[in-house]
Structure formats: structure tokens, C-alpha cells
Length: 432
Image 1 (tube, one colour):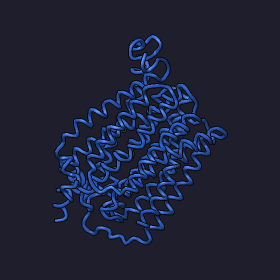
Image 2 (spheres, rainbow, N blue to C red; image 1 turned 135 degrees about the vertical axis):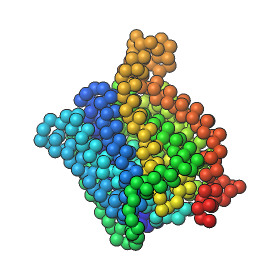
Image 3 (tube, rainbow, N blue to C red; image 1 turned 90 degrees about the vertical axis):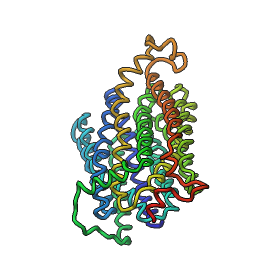
Image 4 (cartoon, rainbow, N blue to C red; image 1 turned 180 degrees about the vertical axis):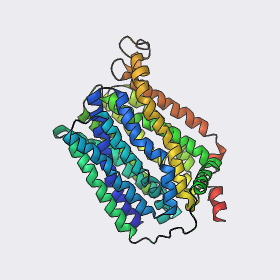
């Protein structure tokens, strides 16, 4: 656990820097180009290479030193940030330059995530999985809790250059912590012959061949779609009635809930009934998302955001733990790579579609003389950004409907540890 904590501290710091850059770039692009689809394009390119290459990263994580894979992925991702910073400093930063920079960072980040996930299984016992997942969620919450608040303040007296420079520095801190831990971990690299295609197929089979894991990945993919939509559309929706400073406050205050939820999970050290926790979290996620899009009242949106984010760690930890308990450790690098690409495709889809849907479908519906201005507009309001609000709330409704359908999945329930069954069936077979 001490070794995990050292790596976790580094990733926590890196997460803050990543969140600051993401926030600053979304504000910069929206203010310069004025359309949600431009923000959506940058977001897609920041995540798509990472997702598409994650199976390759997982394959390498099962073959080579997982900590060194994290170092290469995290360290080289700074090259993309440096590209954006240099173009901003010595030239006129264009949208295509931002796209190239975030793509470079995303390509190298694909080496990091599968290795990080598999390292948790290397270092900890099964009883510590949920606690560790909760701590990972705390680190992730820093992107929403600390980063927007700090970035909003920095943008008040400086520009995006300072934020990019800070992010690059946080990456070097992360690399140092990983190297320190790696010195004290005995690594046993595989010496058998390397068959990339065969080993990649084994990784896919570990996920698609298990009916419960397969169902779980579908649910994770849908959840990622809804989160990606909210992540992309929050900035243009809120900026339509307030400024970037208030947007930073709103995201930070809302994300307090994510920190609270993650801390609760870490304290309780939950060891069973993860399916129930997953379904409850999804239901409350949906309610929170409905509230976020319903109005332009700052305090109402903040409360709805708190509800959404306080329950999000329960969804993430439940899904993470269920998958980790039902997949053998020797294929976990490849499995997490496969899970990454299948689940995160939901994010890519939302990043690609949300801006277009907002600009060309939902916003026109709730303009002053839009088709729904005299009906739905009486609830959601009309004018700039209200179509995005309608889209977000509809997504919340769909979350609840999907959750009710998934509650009937027998394969998903059989993965869980309950009071009546001390271990999942798949895990018992694996140990035997």
C-alpha cells in the first residue's frame, strides 16, 4: 500500500495539471471561435488516440515493466503540451495546432492507463481493491475540484501559457515518483516468445468471453457517453449566461461531491454488493444530470452537480472492482486496454456528436422562435445555451432507463460478492 500511495500522489499531482489544461483549452477555444463544435473537436482528439491505442498499451504492460511504461507514457505526453506552448509563444496559435498538440499527448497517454490499472493489481490484495479504486477516484476528482478553480483564478490575471507550463512541470513530478517506487519492486518480465496478435486476442477474449464482464463494459461505455457529453457541454452551456471565472467556481464546487464520494468509499472499504451500489449510483447520476440542464440558476445547477459528482465515484469503483475481481492478473494489462477502448468509445462518440447536436439540433429548438420555445421552452427557458440544457437533461432520463433495464441482467449480478455468496463464481473458478 505504501508503494501504491507514492505512485498515487504523483498521479494526483499530474491529474491537477491535466485538468487545468483541459479547462483552459476549452475556454480558449470557445472564446476564440464561439461554437461548441470547436470545443468538441479538441476534446475528441484529446481522447481518441488514447482510447484506440489502449489495447496496444495493455499488451505492452503485460509484457514489459509496467512502471516504466507509465514513465514513458506520462513523460512523453509533455511533448504535445510543449508544441502548443511554443506555437502560442512564438506564433499565432490556430485550432489545428491545438488539435495536433492534444493528439500527441493522447498517443503517449495510451501507454499509461493500462499499466497503471494493472499495477494496482500487482501491488494490492483483493480486499484493498475498492479502497484503492476510491483513492484513484479522488485523484481523478482533482481535475474537477481543484483544477477549474485554480485555472479560473490564473486566467483572471494571466493566460493559457502559464497553465501549460504548470502542467508540464507536474508531469516531471509524476515521473519521479514512479521511478522511485520502481526501484523497490521486483519485476519478472516474461521470457517466452512474443506473439502480439495471439496475446491481443487473449486480452479481448478475457473481456468479451465473460458474459458478466461483457455486460459491464456495455454499461460502462454508456456511462462514459453521458459523462463525456456533460464534460464537453458544461462549458458552453454555463458560459452562455456567465463568465469563465464563475464556470471555474461552479465546476470546483460541484466536484466537491466527487471528493466526498471517493473519501466515503475509502473509509468504508466496501467489499460486497457492488452491483447494488452500481445501480444506485447510476440512478442518482441520472437525477443529477436532469437537474444540471433544467435551469440557468447558478445555485440549482451547483446542487445538481454535487449530486452527480458525489455518486459518480460509486459507479466507477463498483464497475472497476467487479471487473478486477473477475479477470486473471496475468492478462489484466491487456484486459484493461480492451475495456478502455470499448468503454471509452462512448466518450469519443459523445465528444464527436454533442457539439454538432447542440449547434444544429437542440439550440435551434429553444431559440426565441424555435420549434419548442412555446412548450418545452417554458420549463427550460429559451435563448443561448438552453438547447444544451435540454440535451443534458434528456441524457439524464436515458441513464435511469438504461439502469432499470440492466438491473435484470443475471450475468452482471453473478459477478458480485454478496452476503450469501462470499466470492464471485468466476473468481472462485480462477482460484481453483
